[in-house]
Length: 271
Image (cartoon, rainbow, N blue to C red; front, side, top):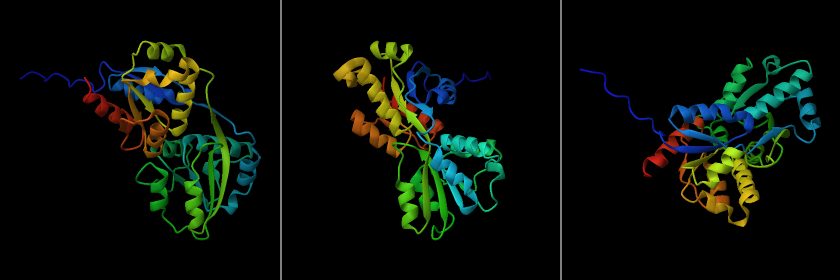
């Protein structure tokens, strides 16, 4: 018997826009292209420093007074590591009693790459799961939460504080909106050439809406008619409903692999 023909790639012949930070488009592009998609880069975030480093630097100078650092993004990991290096240390050489928690596979991988593997990763890649499954009681714990300067969720800080923890929440980076749409994305939208658009955070939704409005005016939402809106998780889905009026698919698990799978499912039922 001959070798059976290979199964068709799930996104073969489909064009998918990916709205991540410009520096983070590579990994998403690889996964979507591996599934057969033509990828349109639509960078919706510019990652940079917070307005002031002082609060983060002050907290890191007193790192021996904390029990946990809770990271909700790889960007937070990178920022903390860079600021620790300026102080002559790093996450791998942090005080022995300081443990690390990471929300999400990419965040955990970033810590692993620095030789500082996470002590705890929740079973689901969302903040709510971290709170539910946290391995110790929050009572009496001192937690450092490095996060995005604006638009980040305060749920973690509020929940841990309610459990009796002393929480220090500091800006470690900021995500801003790019100046405009790149030519390739603009042309794909003008030609109605997209099958799906994917969002990896609430801010990518907000900034994409802002970029579309800047390019197409008040009727910008019409550019997404017939385009499947795919979200990475519950909070991003909620933002899609608020800003775009709908969400057509949600990743499960809430990571890039799940985003590709959700996109494939949504387009499978569409001719």
